[in-house]
Image (tube, rainbow, N blue to C red):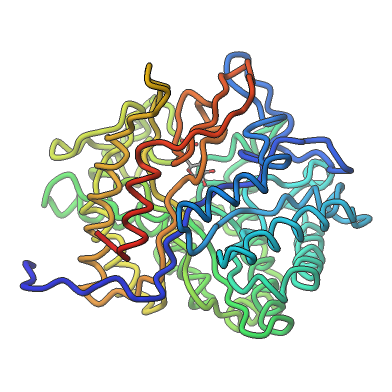
Length: 464
Ligand code: BG6
């Protein structure tokens, strides 16, 4: 639809930027922090999470740069293992102090803290007790939530329960060191995470005045390869399994019917305890956090043993599933150098679909382009490709607002360079360059990229 006039971004639009604790903070074993499943990650050629961008020691300087950028919101995660080193035992005061200091610093600059409670970094000690497959982790998470709300709820009003639960279920290797769980176990983990989020949601409403809480899945529209009805069904299948399962549960508190049939047919249904479904139905989020990177295109399955192609998938690359869908190419879209589709219009499609389904405020909690940014001879980072990428996505976000979508904010990934989940510092997302290599941490100097100045102007003008 071509509009004669676009609606403006709302005056209180949350122009933000995102990070996560284990990818940015470093200080992985300092001041009493316990180990998380991510701390076992010791890749040979790329950076691990031990020092990362050392945000833990540089947070004041980093927040000052956020203020200079003009951020209205900063979305970051709290490391569960800083607060409770073994996940369910003693509280670590130094961890509480660190986040208090960070939140105070943000508030001093009038930057709204948007806090993710759990971003891929389950305490290792809980993992060793069975992780999310064990219902004890639900209780541990709820206790952790209570501690967060008690300590930070006076200043933090925007909460996100679990980052990309759907990625943890569909791409489980990085979160399950030691042994890859079976699909049946994964759907049990998934159910337990649903219950944990629902309990945290209810608790947030009980404990925090004006507290707002929501999930943060990775959602993307799935396109059919052609208008062949079999392709349409496959796109529906995968969109439901990958996306709607998670949002239907968060918003309506029920299993998506198509996904439930799939789980039954594949003998993957989780054990549901008495009271779970009532609780899930009671807990209502206040907004939906959405991580969006790229759409995906799929074709109807052949169901002949070849639907799952032997490609390695990451969170944006579809690999196919026997009898459900096949991964297909989209000839109309470019890809990043890492094979992720670049689809700004897909952002509008995704936002329209989500809003149409749930009619809830949406906060974009991640979106951005990973690239091999390099320091130029003039000492600057000329990331015109990032400016181009974000400009196109912001424009589509504005079109979605004009379509009537209640979009409350946009937090690109990421505020500063951090360890990418698969490519370390070889793939950077930030507005701020962190001068380090995979193994040589140098001085960790912070350098503003060209996109920093561009984004600052966008924020100042409240839009493009
Ligand atoms: C999201 C995650 O899936 O994608 C982030 O929430 C991640 O933690 C981001 O960093 C980008 O992915 P990657 O693999 O390029 O780091």
